[in-house]
Length: 117
Image (cartoon, rainbow, N blue to C red):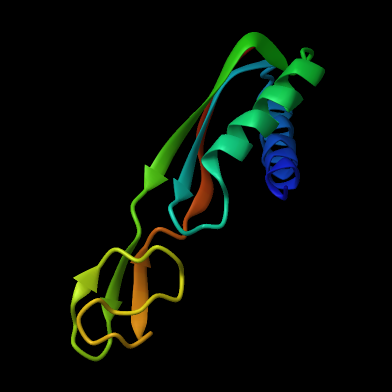
């Protein structure tokens, strides 16, 4: 489950930024997770809960993870149909060729976090 590693990296970045800003405890973390980003939302939630429970010096007991799911969109470079792929390389539903250019859905980033001194 690579989500544990991803969450660890995310929380390390947040902790470093929070330390620089004098924030002592984190209340909320918001991420943007694309549908085809290869990060599973449920696994990210589980990883966050584990890190939160093991790091109460960094997180409040009620700290929450909010995920904003970015819808996947692609456009066929042959017929120009826009469609919703279920993976990064998907067949165009019109011409059945794997020629789609991903327009959205691959994002995996920190949107924001909230904390207190």
